[in-house]
Length: 109
Ligand SMILES: [Zn+2]
Image 1 (cartoon, helix red, strand yellow):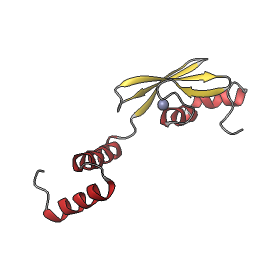
Image 2 (cartoon, protein in one colour):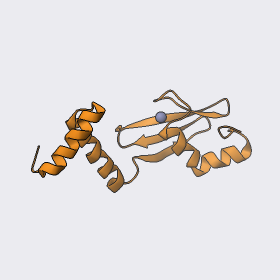
Image 3 (cartoon, helix red, strand yellow):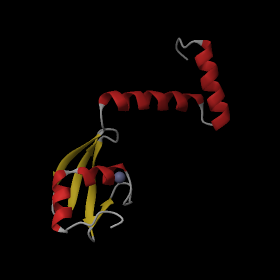
Image 4 (cartoon, helix red, strand yellow):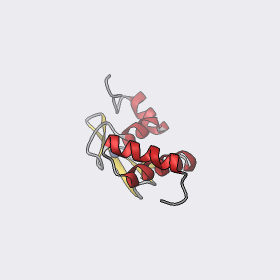
């Protein structure tokens, strides 16, 4: 472990012991959270089509398609209607327009 004060290392070790998560994973998660905050959101909208939305995910380093399926949004990567990609897709202006036109139903409505 590079140059961290002992009291911080002890704290990390306590957390590792209590959670059963390896110390290196805890440190990696803290670094991830820090950079996620500082680099801004990982998701950006690439394109909106009639039947799907393509989202660029910088963390995954790939494009993810969210399908408009039966009036709902479905993430083909996570295979679910509830993930960060779907949540992001709902916020896109053109998707909001599709909701207004009745092409998509907002979850739970
Ligand atoms: Zn997803």
